[in-house]
Image (cartoon, protein in one colour):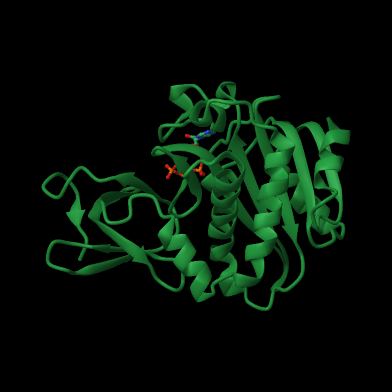
Length: 269
Ligand code: ATP
């Protein structure tokens, strides 16, 4: 397995590889590696995660032999900590492009950090920053992709309907070939972080664009509005019937397809 991984990544700009059959979380290993001096574009790959994490310590399920779970380590070019929220969409753009080029699938990026096929989640992205006091030491971009149908967690473990790449395309997917494509797309887009071209691509591939959506927030009323785009700092723009705008900050919020304009929740504005 590890030999196949190293062969597949030989054609990428990855600097060093750490592969594990099983690990707690590839992001945790990446953060430990940064603390001991990881080079830029090092990667942690695991066949299984026993404590895979989503945002706010929610669980990300990675069963052995079924998924792709990896974390890319970025330790150079950190002049702009303000751009950190844009790394999850950078991962989303890379995954979207890789599954299009390799498998012909038309995935959509669900703001802020998931990727969907036919409105079902097959990929989650978790970005974390490593600080030493006020110095940014690096950023880790963790990406989990459901490859075979067996990767999809039980419905009780899904907070949003889930799917896998093979269920969507109907043929076997070579995991490390996919990884190579994601990494190459990531590196091609990395210098564009936050550029007009980057924001345009993100918006163009956004799930539910032009549709009514609901933003669920813990312990607050949901916000309902039509999803019209993203602002330059990555906030989601919703508009209500009267054209009033609300900007949604990336945080502990959940985006859901909207129930339409006349049910529950407070409207954008
Ligand atoms: P939401 O998807 O509700 O908008 P989120 O973006 O914060 O929330 P993530 O942090 O990306 O969610 O992922 C964690 C959630 O994803 C878990 O709470 C779980 O319900 C779901 N999940 C866990 N593992 C998988 C998987 N392999 N495939 C699809 N969904 C998963």
